[in-house]
Image (cartoon, rainbow, N blue to C red):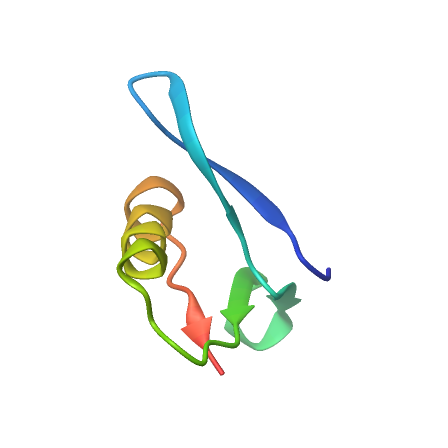
Length: 64
């Protein structure tokens, strides 16, 4: 999908939101969800959100 949104939270509280550029299911890797983002500049906030996506959802954001 285009511009999917993911709630970011901790201890049962939503503390922010991450909006990616794209997401899709990769049938080659057992149907895992792939999240892609096109970045010109990797801001500190983006880097934090990408780390939080990995910690909360187990999703590594691919930069294209």
